Length: 251
Image 1: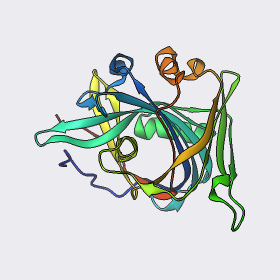
Image 2: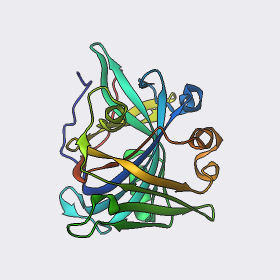
Image 3: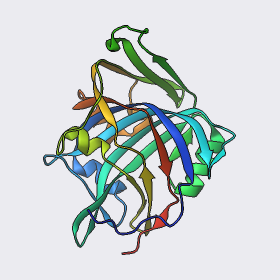
Image 4: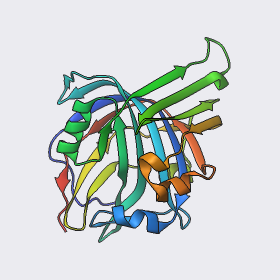
């Protein structure tokens, strides 16, 4: 697929992404439309738009190759899926973030300034339980929790077996083969930035849980969708990732 442009500069931010957990739900277009940046469109799988809660751990964070002062931290984000429509069809499939949470004010501030994304700082924790040497892979457990408006929230997932690459055309591929971020509104030009990382292998959940009412931190339209059982719960493989500098889309 043809993309409308490519980054001119190397990645600004590089990090080792570890233990990404994804919880995803179908959602009505009407809940997403106020958040769709100009120049992109809601992307759908089998006719449905999707919303995802994604939690992951950043390690060895670097800025332009230099170790960052805050090198290790959690992130939890809420996102939905869009595509950039060009002359050759859909191009540059990506995501729009509704909320992004990290534990450090400095990280949140810089991300808002550089990328224009909706970062907030809050208390966060994680717990990773790996299987014993030679033990069953099903013992693996990944858990994140965070605080918002004085309330605690959590997500956790257990998984077993080896990860596999997503089948072409599957929901798993739709949710994870995303290499662009977009943000903006109809009153200003959309900013886009590319993500460089290898394709993930994915392991389905054998058990999972979500704690806390999401209405307080993500709003009723999204909380309504998240009140149902997720259509997909996945654990993705660790990977190095590079986030490039944002640029304005040229219509």
